[in-house]
View (spheres, rainbow, N blue to C red):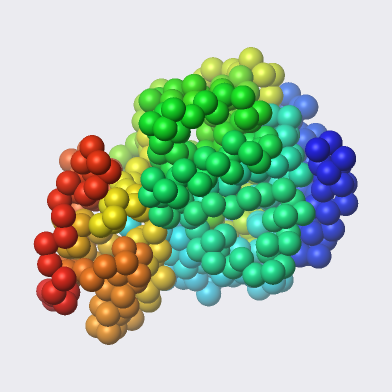
Length: 469
């Protein structure tokens, strides 16, 4: 209700961010002022912030100082985004290898994070208070583009263990006060999805936050059950974490009678771009520098796909400088009719993930098995292939920190997710090659559902898993 939204926005949200030590409101105020600037002013501001970023990290971050010296580059030679091509690209291997050296000698409190996403390469890294706050501010910034904000009732269909497992009393109280209901995207059987739809129909929600594939699956289930959700009162569905395909957007929009707002970014890469109500995928250029590079590492021609490389300007305490996301995107020369001064991405051709099918027909989001492996020390890269309901083949690239005992942790973690004994083979390889398209599929499933909602390939054995080394 309006009174509750006012209470959250003016009291509870500021109090929460203050208690966490996050300068979120200061950053948000600055961002919203920038939305009223001209494109030329945003370009000048971005260049100024980039110079400050380079000066600070060169002085206080050993990794950046050593990298720039090896490249023969002085801070004064990086005056604008185009000058970044003088520096090497940072990849996940660099973050893993140089994690201590990436920390500023003036860094305050740092929070450890891990991510595997859809790249197949687990990553442990640190984020500063300012960097975390900037992501929260970005989220509120784009919510307000859509006439929404903290305090509007939210249906969150998500899957990160950070959001799913830490549901202690304080967190539950926080979600209740902020009018956020969190539902797991990890296990979506028909019975579970029916319960989710019951909540959606009766909850008075104003927005949904979800993976594209998960909300698409839920909308398919609503169609199958003949439920009419067009009058539930949603204003927008915010999706991120995966590629949003046109057919998904169409079904979600038709089923829920509201717009779909696509977002792009990541925990390590930052909040990179987001769609506005007029359809423009705006790069948040005051917070990040985005480069689109061809296969030779040169700036891709306008309209030509290339790898998305980002420099998060709020990450100076643990800098992500020219960080290669592994995703593919296309820059746009169009201007958005919304009038915002931020440049546009034409489209994002990022990696996608498959679902895993459990024996009872439950659909498991790919991240539910990705999280099992990404937290294990010593795994450089992995691919999970579900050949049958109870048979998995896992390819692993390991380093010297990997312990062979981790095989039992992998098996136990997968069995916990699927709730049945599994046959698991683990193959160790020196590297994992991408597909012919150049994309890397981290999770692949050969199992489909029959018309009755059961796996088309039934469980063949309950024998103990076999491990191939």
